[in-house]
Length: 528
Image (cartoon, rainbow, N blue to C red; front, side, top):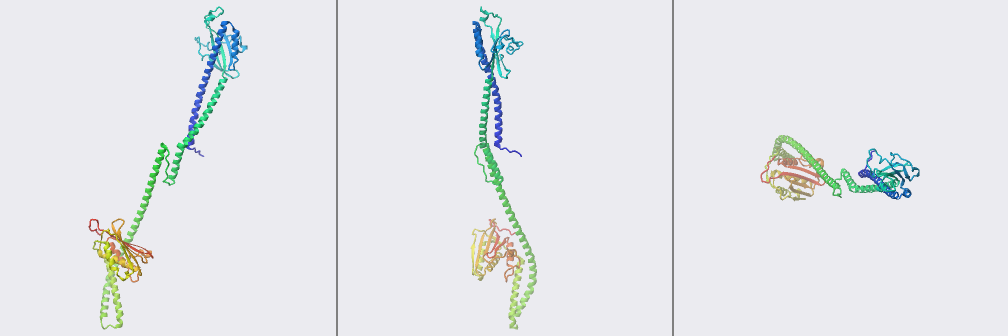
């Protein structure tokens, strides 16, 4: 399984690794420098000690008191840091040693105490302090510092009456001191351990501080960004990141908020565009369906018109003859009185058939309209004034709601009056006892047409009959011919208008007619 580390853990580990590396390098350099300083300190102490012994040896030699010199060297050799002290004359013989068994021995020139002077090609009389010291380990493994210092011939020693040193003998002997470094190395280890402990504590404090600051300054803003991204991916476009700093993360949070706002606006625009497109497609589909229905209805009406015209002409001539001869017989005094009622019934039915034939001819002819600019409100008032005193309108209240600023319509006034009369009469037939007719005029939503609505509170039209209401010979009335609304539909179409109907059973029916308006310049609109 893949191990996933958080950002704060990665930063803490990386920072800690860098600090540990630098602290390790610093510990190495510090330990190296401390060791060098320790050795230099030990060499300096050894040099000071040999200088003291040299001076004491000079005083003792001047007083010819070797016993006092050896006693003083013994006391110095008893120090815990001194491992060994020996005096070597110029012939290589150990004349005194803190290890009594070495006294009288002759050492080789390659011995560590002599090599610094007896190196090949060494012409120097004096040797530096560093060249006089050496580090090595004893047989028991103790690390020590060996320091050798020459005892030089002084003028008092070569010219005095009691001494026998020659003047050309520059070096009378060598003082060799071995100093133990165990105490210094122990202190060095203690110092190193203190340094390591302090370094670890410092790393711990720095790690905790870095973790805290990283969590506060980096991890929290990043977590807010991650949470914000999750909310946006879940569809919450109202989510925003609180900006708590004026640095790069603050700039990033502000940029993400701006991006989210832009995404929200784009999403809203897409939704609005999709909704608008859906509405437009739906509206256009409805328009296409209506156009198809209207086209189908127009084609059917045209076919029926041609058929009706032929039938009407064929029926009209025989019917006129029947009506003529029936009238002649009715006026003949030789007619049997018992047959007179039957003959009058024949004459009445012939006249009724003649009226139907007349309506059929009007339906088939579709007379061309004589258009002019007229006030729709005034035209409706004339129709209402003509009908409101009719017996069928006695118990019906007519309410008018006109748009007084409505522009004139460009139609044939007589034909439109015929349409309105037919609609008002149909409304009165739907309310045989009582009811209300509402007449409303206004401008259409697109502003290019006048809209007229005639609503009644009658019985309503069933849904299955609404699609056939404008078909010729379709009627729900016992005495109707079914041609009134068909003729009205043709008249409205010929006047470049539209007629629509909506109805609810038990509530009422509303007929809506859209008619073209006269243009703003007062010119007549062209009939299309």
